[in-house]
Every structure is written in C-alpha cells, then in structure tokens.
Image (cartoon, rainbow, N blue to C red; front, side, top):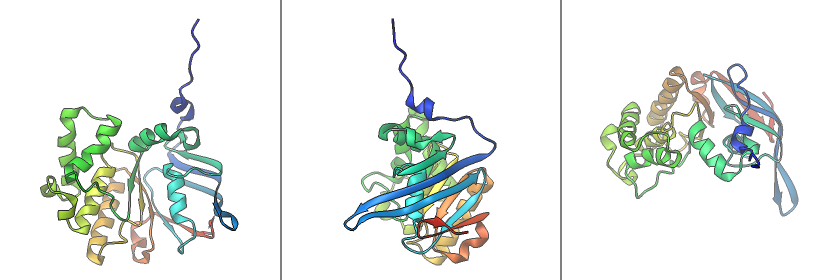
Amino acid sequence: MFTQVANPIKEAILPASSSRLIELRGVTKAYEVASGQFLALKGIDMQVDAGEFVAVVGKSGSGKSTLINVITGIDDASSGEVLVASTVVSKLDQEQLSIWRGKSVGVVFQFFQLLPTLTVAENVILPMDFCNTYPVRERRERAISLLEKVGIAEQADKLPAHLSGGQQQRAAIARALANDPPILVADEPTGNLDTQTSEDVMRLFSKLVEEGKTVVMVTHERDFSRYFTRTIMLADGQVVS
C-alpha cells in the first residue's frame, strides 16, 4: 500500500480569479531590532490586475522595498496572505520559491546584479537553465531575441563591465523576461541612470505593459507618473492612497 505524498507547489496554486495577478490581504512584516520589534508593513491590503503598470511610492523607510520583497517571496510575510500569479507564496519553501519566482515573476534591481564573469547573453540564459523552461538548443537564440527586444543585441557577447549603466539595466530587463513571466517587479530601476536613459527604460517598461506584461515598480521619480496606470503610496508601512 502506497501513501500519496502531497505536492506543496500544487497545493499552493489557487484557481485564477478574473484578471487579478497580485493580492495582499492584511499583510504585516516585522523585524527584530535592538529596541524590540519593528513593523515595516502594517496590515497591507493591495490588488494588482493583469496589464497594469503600478507605481509604489513613498519616503525612504515607508516600506516600499519590503513590500516588493514580500510580493516576490524574497521576504516572508509575518502575517496575512500573499497571492501572486494564483499561488499562495507563503506555502512554498525556499527551493519551491526559487523555481516559482523564476517562472512567474521577473525581478529588476536598481544595481542590475548581473553576474560579472558571464557575458550578457549568458546572464539572460541563466534563468532558463535554472528553471529548465526552454530546450537547451533554443536558449541562446531566445536570449539574443530578448536582447534585441531591449535594444542591445550587439552587446550579447560582452561582459557587463563593458556596458554603460543604461545598457546593463536593459540586460537586466532581458534577464527578467527570460522565462516569459506574467509579472515584472522593479525596485528603483532608474535610480542609477541619467535622465535620458531613465526615460528610455521607462518607455521600454511601458511597451512591455502594452504587450501584456504587468509591472509593479518602486520609484522616487515623480516625473514618471504619465507612464503609470495607478500609484500606490506608502507611509510608515501602510497604504495611505
């Protein structure tokens, strides 16, 4: 007689409800500090639908990056429920989270975080290797196609150090798109870029939204409001508008 073992990833997947891709219900995040407990998020309720380009704004320390980390599973919520791409993120262990994140959420960081010893194309191929989403023989071709999409295909075989900041961020966006996730999450992606390059990157994100992606972006930039479909403002770990 055999005992059937539950599949945690399958158990964490809920039937998709309409077009909602992200839903946070009463989410708190607490950190232990020398003086006791610090609440970075306090009962966050938030929804993002497919096809939205949502900005998360607020002063330093308001909880923006913590919110992004909870959505992507980089941080665990202390309480409440986090549902992303029909998955209850809190039900996944670290290995399952890595695989789920690789397929469901593309993450773009302020400091690019490209691996310096890999070429640009190899950086884009890496998520495909990790999640085994495409046949090996197709991965480089897909990487080049994505680099062409973001406008830097000619940089494919260079190391990241030989690229400008704007080119590195475009490479990071291509890497985030490697496994064709429905959601892109970006934490201050223009923070290290000049004004013109920042506009170029924002237009690229906007084009991706037009093509069907959903983007959630933490930003301090007020001049980008025309790109967003909606803005969520945080203050002291709470949604205020």
